[in-house]
Amino acid sequence: MVDLTPGEKRWTIVYGKNAAVEQYALTELYRNWQFYVPYVLPLREAAGVDLTTLEHVLLVGTAESNPRIAELMARGVLAAPPGAQGYSLWIGEAPWEAKHRLIVVAGADAAGMLYGVQELLASLSDETVPLDKPVRRRSFLAELPNRALCEAPAVRQRGIWTWGYVIYDYRRFLDQMARLKMNMLTVWNSEAPLNLTELAHEAHRRGIQLIAGYGWGYGHPFSLENDADRAAIKQMALEVYRKEYAGQPIDGIYFQTITEHTNQEVGGRTVADWCHEMVNEIAAELYAENPTLSIQFGLHATSIRAHYTDLAQLDPRMIITWEDAGDLPFSYWPKADEYEATLAYAKELAAFRPGTPFALVPKGWMTLRWDDEWAKHGPFLLGEREPAYLRERLTARQREWDSINVEWYRLFPLAARFYREVLQINPHMLVTGLVEDALFEARIQPSVALFGEMLWNPYREDADLLARAMRAYNCATTV
Image 1 (cartoon, rainbow, N blue to C red):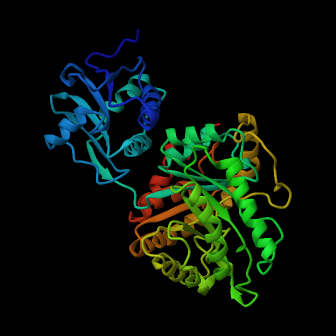
Image 2 (image 1 turned 45 degrees about the vertical axis):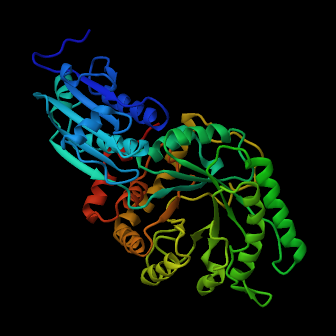
Image 3 (image 1 turned 180 degrees about the vertical axis):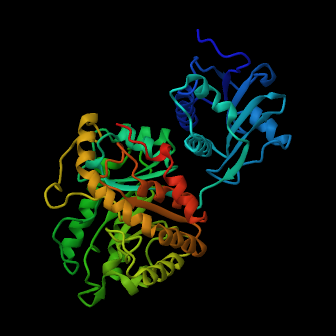
């Protein structure tokens, strides 16, 4: 039994639901809140609880799952979250007793609750806490300044694109994504990992959609003018889907095909024209088998450029995910030599195909060691490595990361401007940044944290974006 100082109040977490994404959010909150208090932190389910019988209260959930939150909204104490994935965070005196503190994290939905919890936990690192003084450490939570914040993400679908075999601990990787309020992971594999079902389950617990990437001819010799080659690509694309991904609890597929080069015309036709014809033919069979299948077409602008209008006949259910469409934010190394031209071209693409998302793969972070480590692997277990391996590899790659971070400190205002201006053209964006072999599960690098902040709200002042990205909760080393 821990003796508290005279007059010290205990915290109780009052939750709405202990399942799925809300369960994950509750666990994250509990784990971190318990760090500050010496007693076993009480948990109470909201249904039937009388808040006036408690001392300090941390109230979490949604208006639907937590009736106490619904009551505070009805009384005007708490504003409703502003939209899907949004949250309201409120800190102040408990309405029933001024001596008690109340903190409310109210999500518009389960994902919004999770993001509100992450914001609350990240904000704790904004204050200086002498952790070596137990009494001060315990009183810190009750002294948090009054606060009211309502937010929802500017980019609705946002996350990371990576090869699967360079995810070394998939649970920690997904934890880090949730910490940055990301909700989509595109994982490219030569062959589907044997633990794909487990990966999908853990992603969904964190409110993250899992997109499985594989090649429709990518990495194989072919000629667009050869009927047999195109037929072989179709057969390969369909067989891999049916064998490895059909029936899996994934949220969609991502493919690349015939565009990762600089030739804009082949055999008297534009590459874009060849693309829409071949891709539509393959996708038609997939949609016939699974009408709700989400398909992203990873398309390299280097072979398309001004001919993108030849893609107008692409099946409207399919999302074009653009790569290599200029420099910042598309270049492998962060640079902005042709930034204005890149932004202008991106705006054209964003306005193309009205009613569909403008999707892109930004780059400029860590990439594969293509010269000596890339290979087509066989069946494997994704993300099952010892922590010692992560520590060793992070040490080896950190110097390169330091250089990358420095460049992003200089250029991130231009990236924020890019997202602001493109959102004005097409408010439905899908952005998955290329962060591969990055030891992301071991440490969130400041430049990746900046990326997450820009996707959440690129309208903040630049200094605020940087300060939020650099919070200890975001950039802590976890292994």
